[in-house]
Image (cartoon, rainbow, N blue to C red):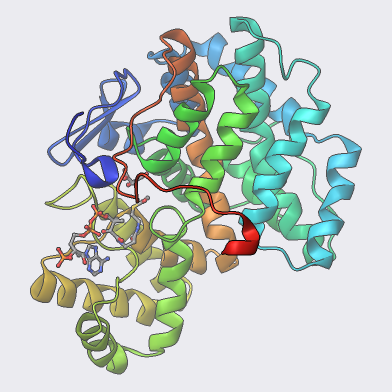
Length: 372
Ligand SMILES: CC(=O)SCCNC(=O)CCNC(=O)[C@H](O)C(C)(C)COP(=O)(O)OP(=O)(O)OC[C@H]1O[C@@H](n2cnc3c(N)ncnc32)[C@H](O)[C@@H]1OP(=O)(O)O
Ligand SMILES: O=C([O-])CC(=O)C(=O)O
């Protein structure tokens, strides 16, 4: 049998045309992330990831209007949020359940052809935004806000969350954040999605499985933990002691390190820039300064660099977003990548079924329970 590679490090488990990481360069279907972050809308990136080309004007308009139409949820979807809020469920737990519940109201959930796949893709991508925003409002005892036809995906999300249309600057920043989180080759949650649908299970199953994987603090859950760490540290004067203690205790520092990038995550520079600007504008500058100090110390002492989750935390915090919504917002964006990989898996499928190296006892004989 082949040699065990713990964590499947370096193993190529799939072909893909969705995204690629070469050195510290990330591309979506051949377009550099810098180009897309500066110039594209999130809707264009969704289309690109699902079709491997940018949409023409008509295709883009169609996608935008379908997304907005599908952002409206079934009335029973709205009412089910009450169950979560009564039990103070973490929004990522709630989102995982809600994504699964969505399938109950999709008459084509188990239909298996290209047209049905694309319909499901748009539905899920649209509704994931409404689910996160509605959950947040219902638990605050606020009315849910329905999307507006004339707003972009990014603006609609913020509108549905806050009940107020974002400024152009807020919309632009959030659009960039959505693009930066959209896809990332064979990360843990995307691989999970591929494994689930490689059994030819439906798209909802793939997305639900992926959301479960994203939730963990070693993956998408790290952004919420970054904010927890900053709150624990409290002020810039405490940074050095806190970090030294963590290093001494061999504890992981959230928002740092990466399986693939060893010279830095190319997405982090955008989020750092955004964090610098928005913390200044909103009176949270010390959080940015603390973040930079943490990053400097970790680089010096451990050679560790920030990943996408580090500076996104202070960006979202400064936008007034509750900390436990950071990972669900990551999921809103990453749904586009999960779906792209699910579609690709369907198109060239073989069940994903590796082997395990058995290290347990052998040759044992059954003993009746009275004799044990
Ligand atoms: C969107 C995303 O998923 S980005 C990643 C988000 N996750 C985090 O920020 C959580 C913190 N980071 C980590 O746990 C890891 O760096 C991961 C999960 C991202 C990558 O894990 P792996 O590739 O398995 O690296 P691994 O955990 O083996 O780390 C290699 C070495 O660097 C150390 N290291 C890696 N990341 C960190 C960290 N954040 N803090 C402290 N030490 C770290 C490890 O302790 C290990 O040291 P050792 O060789 O002395 O034991
Ligand atoms: O690729 C990974 O392992 C994690 C990551 O950065 C992402 O999913 O965006």
